[in-house]
Length: 175
Image (cartoon, rainbow, N blue to C red; front, side, top):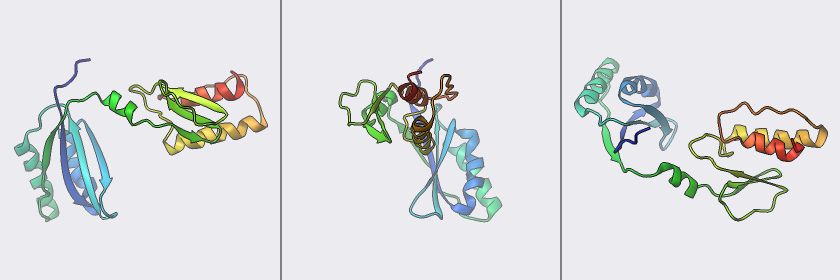
């Protein structure tokens, strides 16, 4: 897979009532879109990222048409080149050890244990599943609770992440 020289960020701000409409207007120009609440629930930032340099005039035209259909002012468009960096290394640097129930979770090359019964070392790489998402946290706590009451011989972690639930189950049931 070849690496793009740059990634580009496209941003606008919109009120909550207009977010969906402007999100649809920006979708054709972005590889991925994210929505962020700014200061309060009424002020949002719509942020898109794309691998190709965006054409400002084309995006401005789409925003003008959308704003006209809503009879509102055209939002300010911001386009910035993102610096070329190793995002995986950046993610690993920001991955600090943390605890969930009886589990001590850290990057695979992390040194310091933080004193829980079971240590899970993750090589997150490009995968999802650092263990910090609430659904993963709740699943880990549920596994810990189940381990107090029952045992399993066959376990399937049918996710698309780093395999944290498989690792946890293997520790709890030696499976």
